[in-house]
Image (tube, rainbow, N blue to C red; front, side, top):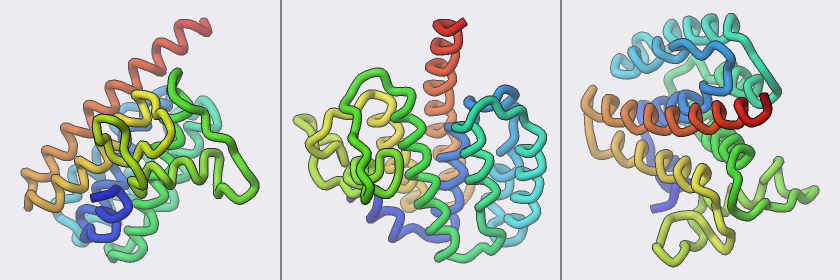
Length: 205
């Protein structure tokens, strides 16, 4: 099942957690990442009861974080765009946007793989290329989902795989057990991007 199909089928918990996880993996772009999204992770199990208050706390923490560049600013904007209502449709639209942003950010840091060409009707920096990945229009020789005819670098491939895995976990595993597994997957992705960001900073320093 493609990433887009999983997003369409996800419930409120899956959508909220998927969006939070996408942003969580991009937090290493902040100069002082701390645990800005921890309130949201902690409250996902409570669902509607605490979502709005936990979201407000996470936004406040994000506002005080040091923003280093336009990419980090984008992470802050995505959190600001999160709906306060615990409802499927606004959460689905937000989760979908977070998915795109996370893939585009990882593409910026990938050092190998095809560089998609931007066109006026592509819908964004990587537009049609990202959407083809998310739709799973084709696979590579190992049947990795969503790669299409392009050669995706390891960061993009890993991010796509984690997005799919998290939605599958949350669909198949109820309660806090599913959220713990999703957090573990997201934490692994955050470590990967943190290492890449650190290496680039050392190379430029």
